[in-house]
Every structure is written in C-alpha cells, then in structure tokens.
Length: 388
Image 1 (spheres, one colour):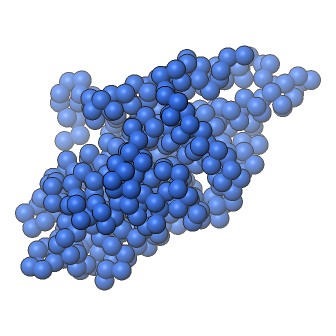
Image 2 (tube, rainbow, N blue to C red):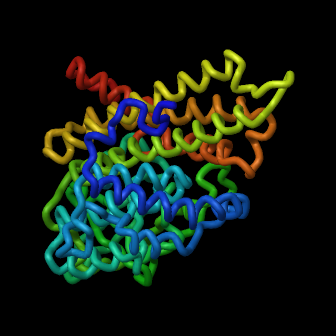
C-alpha cells in the first residue's frame, strides 16, 4: 500500500534531523495531548502542563538562536513542529505559535540586548508565558485604526486601551503590545504581569479552541518602564512581520489537523460495516478519502516549498497568505467531510473530528481572515489594494 502520510515522497526533501524532530513532537502529542485533550475541551480549560513541556521539547521559538535560549532550528523544523502539535489540537499549536512567532520573534528582531536576555530564555523554556496584543474590540482586519495608545510621561510611558481575542492572555506573564504614541506612530511595548492597571479577563462560552486560554488585555493607566519599549521598529511593519511568521506556522499546523481527520475517517470506514461490508468499499466513501489525500498532498508540497523559501529568506508575505488560506480551508473541508463519514459518531469526543472542525473555524479567521488573505493575493496580482 502507498505511504498515505507522505503520498508524494516529500520526506525525501527532509534531513534526518527534521524527521527526528517531527518524531519527538509526535510522540509527545500521542502521549500527553491525545489522551487528555477532549477532557480539557469539554471543561473549557487550558492544559496548564503544556507550556513547560513544550519548552522542554524545544517547541517554543524553535528558530530563536541558542544564545537566547532557543534551539536555533530552521523554518522547516518549525513548520514540522507546528504540524505535529496541531495533530493534537489547534489550541496547543496556537499556544506555541503565539509564544514563538508573536512574542519571542519581535523581541529577538527589535528588542535591546537586555530585553532579549531577560525574556527570551525564560519564554523558550516555558518558565514564563507570553501573549500578543494587536486585535482590538473595534479593530481586527484594520489594525492601523487601533485605539490603544501611550503617552511619554518622562520617566515612563502611560498605556491605555484594550486588546481582544488574545491567546494566552489569562495566563500570560508578559505581553508584546502594539499601541500608538502621541504622534500616531505604532510602537511595541513589553507589558509585564503585576503592573498596576494591567488586567487579563478570560473569554468564556467559546464553541471553538475550548482548550485555549483566550481573553483580553486591558490597560488602565499602566505605567510601562521606558526600557520596555521595542526601540528598533515603528509602524505596522512590526506587527505584520510577526503575523507573517505566525501565518507560516498555521499553514503547516493545519496539515496536522487534516491528517488526523483523514486517518480517523479512513480507519473508521474500514471498521464500520453496513450492508455486510465495510463502508470503505463504497464508491462515495472512497471518493471522499481520495479527495482528502489529494488536498493534503498539495498542502504538504506548498508548505515544504514555502519553508525552503523562508529558510532562504526569499518568501513573500503574499506567498505566506496564499498557503495559510489554502491549507486552513483544506483542513476545514476535510474535517467537515470526515465528520459526515463517521455519521453520528463524528460529533462525540471519542473521536477528534468535531473538535478539529470547531477549532478550524477559528483558525480560518485569526491571523488574517480567509477573505483578507484572498485580497492580499489579489493585490499581489493587480497591484491595487481592495481593502483600503
């Protein structure tokens, strides 16, 4: 039988180190996430052990150099790690993605040496948890209209505003927050737990990403020390660069969710009998499985090529948008088809499909909505922005 996990031999492009990293993360997910994740989702609870253990795995900021506590891996490795984490659950991948791409990455790119040494090693080890503040209650796809702002008060900055839909917010120790100064310029600030006026109320009643700690970042006259300003970046380039890194990881992660749904559906159709034979013998079931494998294979090839371009520092934001949009849509479509293949069993927690499907409804929206990514590609085609 063909290798259903790697139908077109993409593994031939991977190094032995890539495969070892993937296997290590897969074994951790199989041992620590898959047996427990449904309980956490049913309880709407974040698994408090995952950050520390992902730090031990090297899954938090894998591309951060060893000097600052990271493993110093390439971007193919980062993608494979995100893929395996999302095989377990999107919430687990999201926690790692936020820490690495949205918190550690901007500190590494634009922070002072003191900031890097203070925060990055602790974040990499999972000793502290990071969050990222960009989206606001009134501003999602249009971050340039953000209302969160700060004023220079001489010895400190006074920060006011609020951010919403923030992964890790309720449990974070530190947050990279984007806000406007008195001149309307967007800057990055590192806000720490314990600063007066900084609160992180949790968001409840979610039907998606139920194992993710989601909440708000609220700033009520928060005094932020001047040494907590990211000095080497100004404007929307900062947050958008971070989002590109996160979107890269999501594009890989979605493949993991799709693979888990495909594997589950295939096994179920081989075991489930109707009319005295396995339902895998019926044409419509084989059609669905064939289309799933085709789309997963296309997504794998896109992700691998995106990874080689990223490692060569040649990938464009528009290319990342294309792959994020394609791969998440692919995974969501596979989850929906797989749910139908399992019939009523597809909705219960004994199988992962409904959980993946609900999670992917968020993944298709965050880090740039499905439609916005389409318009990013459109702008790259005709050089006319349609969202302004």
